[in-house]
Image 1 (cartoon, rainbow, N blue to C red):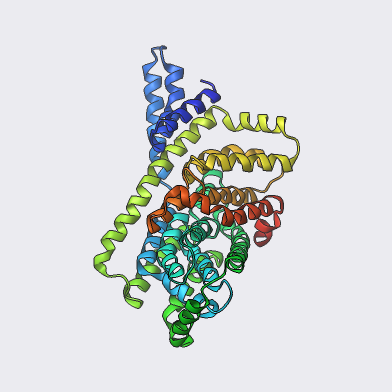
Image 2 (image 1 turned 135 degrees about the vertical axis):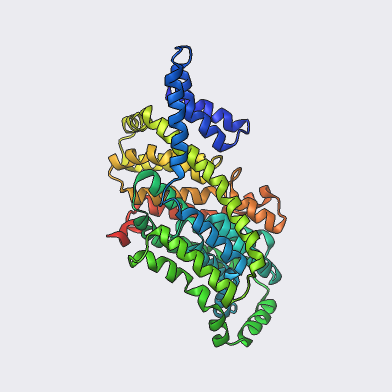
Length: 437
């Protein structure tokens, strides 16, 4: 079976609505059926099937990948515990009386919450639940508020502890700790660009000054000391989680467990915003999120094994290097390809399938694996806010009732900031490599 035919069949299955995990699993075993069909060698075919089943199980039997369900659970606990609301109050205290201050406070809340979440959609859900109604009540447009949070939610996968970084590191053998470090400066860049966009929007469209000053007065009445005491545990959460990784105290997987324990203690016993009776629904939410990802993960890694046996990385690399000789053109083509793929394929399978295929090409052109990983994940962050598989759009729509396509049109102005960041990160390696050297 040729590589082109395999991908055509895979694309056809996706186009008719076959679940992604099933499509990957069928595609993984299809070349074996093709090779042994009609030969009568049933023993060899059975052995190949058994090998594929073992691959499916071994794919998720990984200490590194254990970080994913732990970060998913920690994010669910923090969301239910209302940590994003504590952060929003802090930024509101300092910014509510400034031009564009409240939208900027929402962006900064998203930035800080992202450093504990690891997920784009989870960040949109946690921050959007609280920030979007607050912004609308202060006179900002519903489409503006929702689109801003939907795009800013992409910081959940750019900043550590990003789940896509864990997937990329597992698929390519790249250091996850280095990927986490490399995501910090791009995250700061994107946050800065979104702050500029929010300020410019408010300058152009104006604000309801009376409502903002009234809100500012209410916030200031609480006093800085009371606000600090009420939010300090939410503020230092990223320091504890990420500090344990960068100080060498814990691996990313161990840090994920620390995140779960910390979020439980703070939500249950310090803020008391979460009851023991709520834990069942939180655990179910985390299991529902990860279980679907686990099946995709196992099938994608099995499919990756099949592609390796078919020498797919070598074939793709030979085609790309034979067609393009300029590294700038090559990176531009790869970015366009990833953006197109992101419009119909979810993050996990696209990273697990494409990273092992594209990284050898980039490495041959002299691109650092960590640099390429951050670039690839930023493409995924952009795809979160682009239809038809823009997960952040669906989350934003569910929070506000806005139709998905209405929201998809509204996100383009803030989404431009991510495209600008992508150009910087693609062609200026310093943004990703400065902290790991």
